[in-house]
Length: 130
Image (cartoon, rainbow, N blue to C red; front, side, top):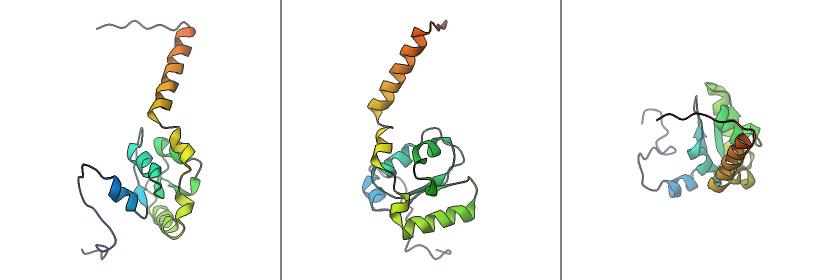
């Protein structure tokens, strides 16, 4: 390619099972401008891949214990520096597995159940119209 990175960057397109390729990645970069729940970022973290991501709500919640891998959205020099750091010191951008556990489906469901119980106990009711 014209950038001279074809031997170092892979853009394979759609895959039914991206996890083997993701697991082999030297770093996973997620430079979103907005994100509600960064599932792909959670998957990369769960696979033990060093990650770099934009400092936005969903990403920041997941990565807050490893602040060196968060960069401001649109900060291209900061993103480049974080990627370089992740490649040279991968452990600086790995997220502890207990952080990932907080995003487990069962944990999330239990949190929603507790929220509903608290709302109901507070006597908050909503009229639902079909």
